[in-house]
Length: 295
Image 1: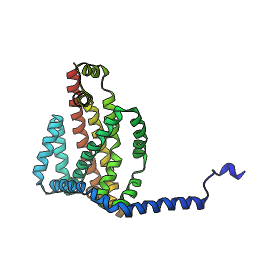
Image 2 (image 1 turned 45 degrees about the vertical axis):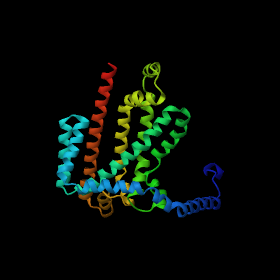
Image 3 (image 1 turned 30 degrees about the vertical axis):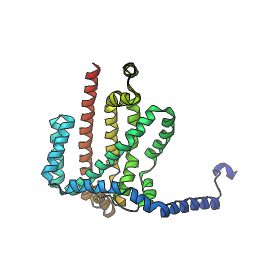
Image 4 (image 1 turned 120 degrees about the horizontal axis):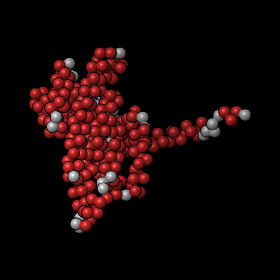
């Protein structure tokens, strides 16, 4: 009767051998192609270093004015602008400015990468049900896989540093960008597309002049979610060398420094709220323009 209570499983020796073969194969791949992959990602490293230097070496009043101007341009709401400025002043007052700017630079690069990679994939999914069926399970895996698991292959391939951390963050954060781009384009009114066809628009013209502008509020929601997920990954990415607010939090966890962890955690929350409010306000403005155009 023991077989009723124990699930049938592979022989332990066979399972151990299978795991050994997979591990050795991946190590072999890493030894063979690791250096080439590092060279491939060098432009990304230069972009990340440039972004970090700009954010940390530019005088803080200029950064504050730039962020306030961007918040005003996106939201046209003084409350959001004042909230962003006050939050950043408090972050600077509590001596977390440099770490915050490093985190903001990483989120900026991560968001740019997610847009550059995610929007074309989302467009391809919206054009083909077959591609959507292939990519959706991959996105499911990317969203449900424990975030620590991403770090293992990335570190084995590229070692410890900023670029491996950035890649792990992008893998974790990009699915909403892809999904909502696909959804936004698929939700464009068929009557509008038929009107574009009647005027003799090509597929490219329809995409550029009709589908993308009308899908933009949904795509902005995807960017918003990507930023939120990237910020959620900051502390985990700090384990493999990503500098910023995550490293003090990690140090606080290791050494049981309560206030250090809480202050830096609140700084991450503050940055997340700024990004969230600004991107949501921009998405709402786009939605109003869209409704006005339809009206």
